Image 1: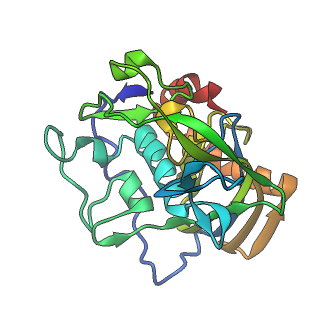
Image 2 (image 1 turned 45 degrees about the vertical axis):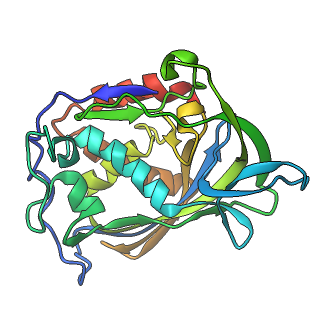
Length: 291
């Protein structure tokens, strides 16, 4: 795990597009849904529940992973939170600078930074959300049991993000021996739906970059989900395979057509005056080996 120091200021406040109310679908903005596949890395992902249960053999007590209707699940709120953290990093959004020691104030209903405008804040509902990630087919996800380091308090100062690098916890991280716990871990392929409302093209591109896509819609780095991220678990790589738009036109795109539309959004974002490239390159360097 790496503490990623942000030294830039919050000058990006106010650069988001003019806000549009949730009661309309603006004809010059994008509203629709994007279907995504999440592929776990070699270490797997373990969305925690805080509950104990028996492993598949019924003989070993384990920390149970999250389920929906007895099936493996990745919480949509967790996917959204992971995407928001990366979005805040690349847009210099306000969370870094609010609270004790920060240089700015928290966003308010009519005064949003780029991240709060898109993901929401007190008094303003976000314009994006993710459905729970469910197995992409009957045998797409398998359940295993792994020995994961017991959590420890990270060294983390205000103005820094915790960036999980995909390596197991080591004694130097913890200032002592690495104690292990038995935990359920998922391996395989999940599917989620990103729903978006009134998004500008550059906003959509920033969001795709924050989720780990590169300019060619490949996977530059994984998102980190669930528990055990400090011990190398949680890396998932995303791919997009179906896009349905309600505005600015009613249309459906699959395969290469879906990819081209998404690449258009990413190009719009990368053409903005910004230092996205530097931050994205650093993220890829730190996390690239995690999946």
